[in-house]
Length: 161
Image (cartoon, rainbow, N blue to C red):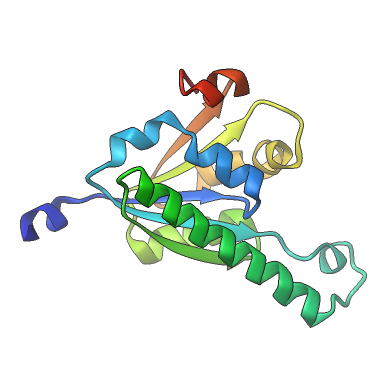
């Protein structure tokens, strides 16, 4: 068993800390390749809108409630991976997505970052397409796999990505 642990590659699965983003990531067919790897699931919460828009103050209760919901979602994701036979450790970060993903990858000494890009105009798609995906490719301390979702109908049947 010790040799298997030493050979395991550290893989960081990252998403935007939303249920939609997590569900999309966990449907990535490439996850089937990772059964023997050391998996970490990272949800990255955005900077609270009030701070981002310059409104200055976001009540601590609101931030804590969002963080608690996002943490619960990470735990649900770890459990979902476990049901698929993939042992994972969950992490939650808050801040600029590229910075947080790269920081986690460095701290974990990840060999691979896996993200999922939906081909649609949702918030998650804009999150990745707008600046996260391109910046991640430029700044990642390791390899990056971007799994592209081309059809939600195929994914729901489990036939493709």
